[in-house]
Length: 103
Image (cartoon, rainbow, N blue to C red; front, side, top):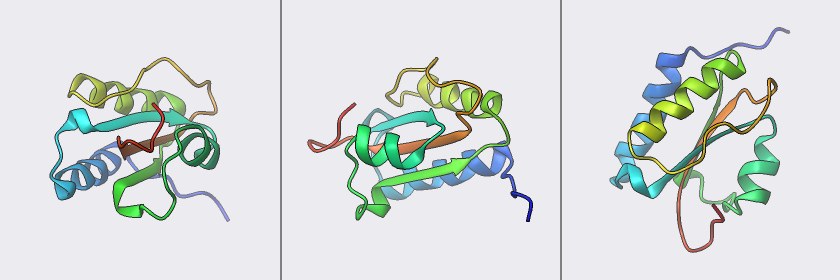
């Protein structure tokens, strides 16, 4: 069965909704891209898996789209460093920065 891709506007709308629903400023959020959500989000960044209302991830159609979305969130005040990942980094993620997380 082929993978269904989410369009960039839908990804942005979903992440925007997550940020707005939490009522926290963009500066309280970290946004990044990866090829391995489990490793990056839950292991590297130490985001609690049970805090599903404090993180979100989506799969972009390609790494270029993921990178463009990531850059837009950084320009809008979210934390993170762009330029990481390679051509397999098609997942974009965002999470609330807490005392537990590792940026």
